[in-house]
Image (cartoon, rainbow, N blue to C red; front, top):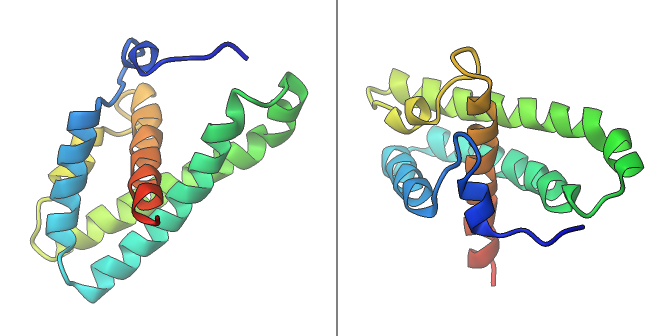
Length: 134
């Protein structure tokens, strides 16, 4: 594996820089507030994000054969993560909130690269939870 840098990531289409991720996450958390149903949906999202981040964290370390073996599971996990983002956003909108953070991530139907951005944001959530778990 060739070591990679954050700067290399930023050169990729639809990358999500740290400041933008922080802003979107803050907006999301503010909308969730203390709403118990929103908190429960966020917990489900965070679990899906942690699982998906595990795939992402290992992807460059795995052999080509291992990646081929894990690809279907990774895709299913990514799909589940997107569903969790959509469920939370839909709920928040039903409660009169904007869920603008979800629109800012984009939709796969509009541009396939938005799928990658959504996955990146899931990894951001897993990162924030991971560093807070010290």
